[in-house]
Length: 265
Image 1 (spheres, rainbow, N blue to C red):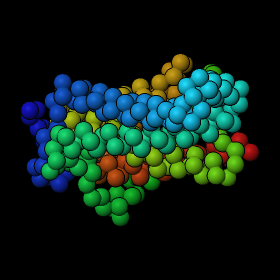
Image 2: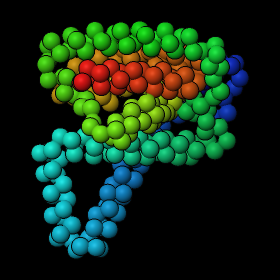
Image 3: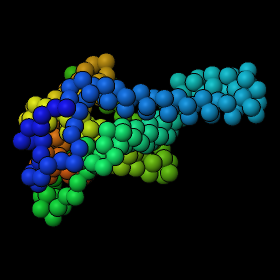
Image 4: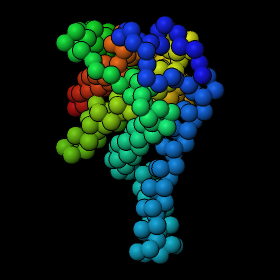
């Protein structure tokens, strides 16, 4: 069992109902979350293939999968739509995985382990809006600089076509992604890091991990995301609740998505 630092108790001053993991437990539990997520997604994929195979036969089902793969390579719109569906599904499964591992660790205090506490929005919203403005201003500058160095960066995120798909994309960006990513990075991971190394280092390390999760071949996107992770960690610590960081993350993604659609028209 790790020894709790003062920061681990939180701003409420009360003792937490559950003790976060130590360094080994944090690594193993995080890997378990990712493994559970991958296993559920794989099971869903195999189940879908099983339905096709039962209906049409194994060989025709394999051909249909191959045709879908070719369609994704040739048709960007189809790829974007499949990506949205897969993204929403993956985020939902990730949420389930985090909750399962947290409840396994402590049935009584699992919400403490993911930082899910009441948040006084009336008092906390001003700092969220201030950080929203700061992160958006930073992102506009960073995006401009990145596109100067790497023009292909403008194609990193593609906006879908069709009203229904636009709504689905916005739902993924403003609801599913913020909830899932904050539960993992500022909830599960940060709670243990804060207990082990304190709030400041916990915010820093969780922001690094958050950036690495957005890694791509040029490394530029991960570098651009890192300061956003710091802002999310700061507001999570200040409010002592991931409800605050989810709110900031959702607003940030929402405004960025709207700007993306406007720029694409």
